[in-house]
Amino acid sequence: MEMCRPHILICGRKRAGKTTLIDRIIGETSLPVYGYKTQMVRDAGDEYGHVFIVPAGGGLVSETGRSSKTGRVSSTDRISSTVKDSINIRDSRTSIVNITGWTGENEVGIAGGRVIRVNPDVFNSIGCALVKGVGKDGDGMIVMDEIGYMEDEAEDFCAAVREAFDGDIPVLASIKRTEHASRHIDTILHHPRANVFMLTESNREEVYAKVSEIVKEWERNCDRSCDRNSDRNRARRGGAREI
Image 1: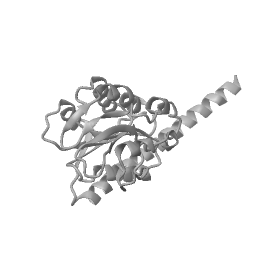
Image 2: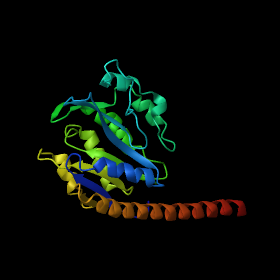
Image 3: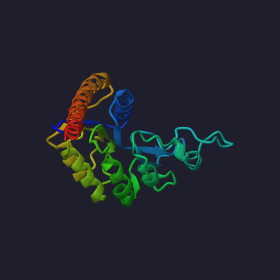
């Protein structure tokens, strides 16, 4: 890309609406969507759940699973109901399907009120692939929902996230406000190119409007870049014919 663009970082406490806002933007944008989302699956009433990392451009773990006789849906039932066809990876990123599968190898840990277990190898393998798996033309945006302290020990993944923030492809990310000490979170929060929006229940629409306008500018920049690339390609083809 020919110009550096500011990234968007949505910061807020649990249930502030960060994921809802990002999903809203994803649903409205014309840009290709890369990156990842994290999704928790747990039984109703359970404090802790299994956390999965999935492609931001399409869901991997379904919201509804096979109903059990008791009327509750267990974590196992939900995971078993997920099939590869539910992975909707846009554009040409079909290679990610082979990396993620559905089999639980994309589980990054168990968490709830606190982190019980972390699988740093999953962050370092699947997470890195999703963060780096952008289109060959360098268009679109990278979604990261969410950046947290679970991945502190996943050095390769943290480096990939920092590299994305240093890069030219715009990033739309969320980050949870927490008292938990995290070098990774601090580094991203203080990144010089991160536009940080503090999200609360009372300012959701205001923040959405501001974020939406920035994303629309990303789209306009992408359109202009595509036009310039098309002009250059036509010029090269024309020159070849003249020779």
